[in-house]
View 1 (spheres, helix red, strand yellow):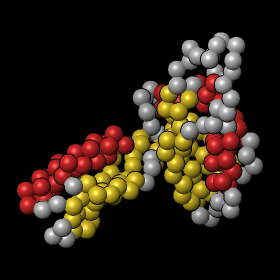
View 2 (cartoon, one colour; view 1 turned 135 degrees about the horizontal axis):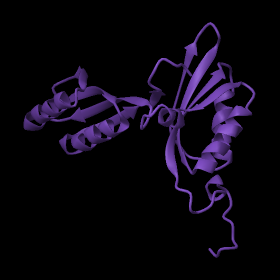
View 3 (cartoon, helix red, strand yellow; view 1 turned 90 degrees about the vertical axis):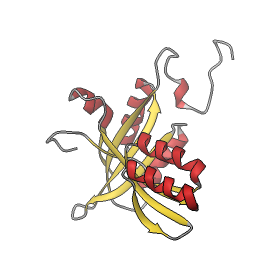
Amino acid sequence: MNAHQQPTGSAYFIAPETAKAESHTLSVLVSNEPGVLARVIGLFSGRGYNIESLTVSETEHEAHLSRITIVTNGTPSVLEQIKAQLERIVPVHRVLDLTVRARELGQERPIEREVALVKVVGHGERRAETLRLAEAFQAKVVDATVEHFIFEITGKSSKIDQFVAIMKPLGLMEVCRTGIAAMNRGPQGM
C-alpha cells in the first residue's frame, strides 16, 4: 500500500501511524433494557473496533442499570473516538476508561479479575501432577471423577493463561472463561 492509499473498513487506520495501540478497560453504565448490548456491540463491529473481553451484568436492580466491561485495543485517538461514540448511545449513562482513571490515581492498571472453569482429563501420575499444579495456582476443584477434574480459577487473565498452558500437556479438555470484571482502587465509585 502506498502513502496515498487509505485502508477501509477499520477505524484503526484513522490515527497516525506513529501512535501506539494499547489495551484499555472501559466500564459502561447502561439502562438494563432489551437491545442495549446489541447497540454497543454494533458500534464496535460496525466501525472495525476489536473487543478483547466483554462482560455484562445488572448491578443496580432497583435503578435497572447494568455494567458492561469492555477490554479493547487502540491508539489514544481511536480510544477517544470509541468513548465519544459510546456516550452518544441513548441508554448509556456513563462511560469510564478505567485504564486512564487508574493512571490518574497513580496506578498502572485497574483491578481486573476473570473466572475460568478448566476441565482436565487424566489418569495415574498425570492426575497427581494436575492436582499439585492446581493447588499451586489456588484453583478449586468443583467437580471430579476418576477420569477428570473441573477446576475453578480466579485471577488476572495472565494467571489464567498460564494455568491453561500448564494444563495442556496434562490432558486439558475444555476451558470456559467469564471475561474481565474490573474496578478502580480507592473510595470513588464509577
